[in-house]
Image (tube, rainbow, N blue to C red; front, side, top):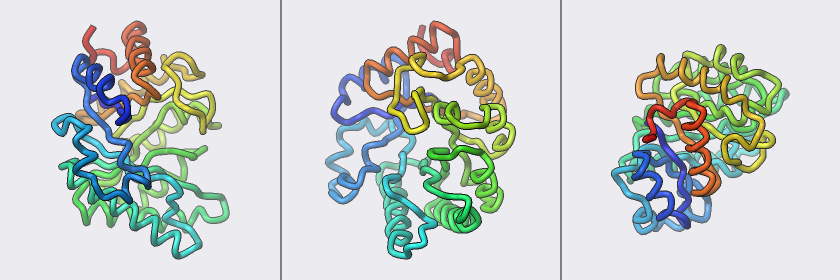
Length: 255
């Protein structure tokens, strides 16, 4: 299953691409605080074709499940629960959350608290939840978190565009997280926290990424893959790049 993250303000342009290429939707807009506080989600949802929505990208701004500040921790948990409730409203079964912020000093608490919380969230809402490498510079903390949780409904979402800008090669991430990976994000950036670029405009080794993704696709049935682009034009260019070079998952696109 190949998905994209359309922005509501360019929805018509995105929908044209989605229909032409037979893509699906990973909703991002409903993770923003100003939208979550609005509560008019049914009105907002009219921007999305409901039969195409398969994944929700959950709240991520300022979220810290392992914060030493109990109030920040409480609000973070509340926002994550709200994302799961929104997913239920849309009939969506998959929710992605970012791993959040941690340091060497609080890594143990971060692992234990996040593992317990997201495991409980997956069980309570009966959703498939994925934790995505966001600010992570090593695969080890996410691996230890998922091992600690031991929950089949809690998996890793691997963003290869962010991995490019870490000290570990993509092979090391896949080798360690392999049995936990259930979702892929494909993106291109100039640095770990950089804005999205059209595929081919950054530093990704697409030959390497494509081979690793093909390997994972052989092991994970119906592996979801989201193409991250900053605009409809970027999405068009990225799809063309994948097709022209026969990179994963080009076989799923119309030629």
